[in-house]
Image 1 (tube, rainbow, N blue to C red):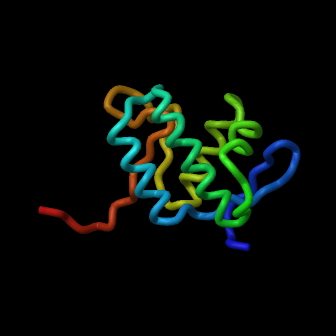
Image 2 (image 1 turned 45 degrees about the vertical axis):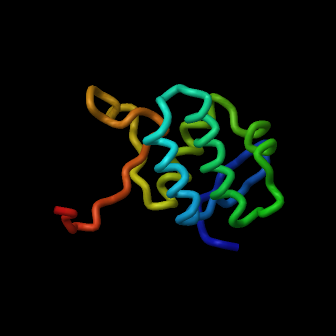
Length: 115
């Protein structure tokens, strides 16, 4: 089992592992290519959560996520998966003008410049 953060889904405890770089890349691409609140963004969030869970539970499907993550638990699950994956999750207090919207994340700085 890959170390991660515990999540209670459907009354059972699961361990969300850090997402693979493939999953992180897909989520970052989704954030750039889709609008907040769109079905495409929602699907990207679900795929990101699933990718994290599948590292420890490869038999889980998108239907599992659809059935066990609801509107009340989605923000908590997303923050947990982003956090364990090394992404900075936006908090409600940070969502002022110009800040990231819920479901968006930033990759932590490496301290280098691309200029």
